[in-house]
Length: 65
Image (tube, rainbow, N blue to C red; front, top):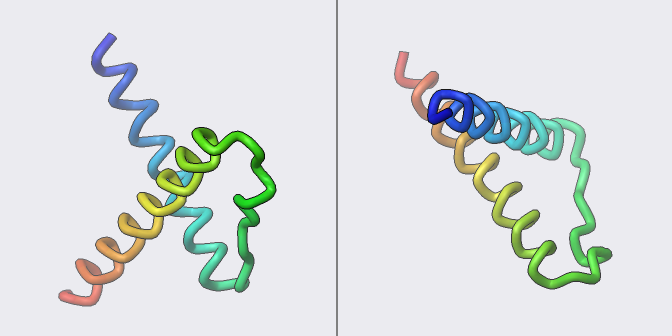
């Protein structure tokens, strides 16, 4: 059970990092303000933020080599 949860969590973060990369390379923006539910909007904002942090960390680690 724990391995399944870990696998799904890593997949979710990777999808978020892909969305962050698309945002940067294609200058796409995600309009989270159109989400009426404030709790869901906060979750989506944090999800996208986590992807940006993973992307930033990955880039800095790759630049070290």
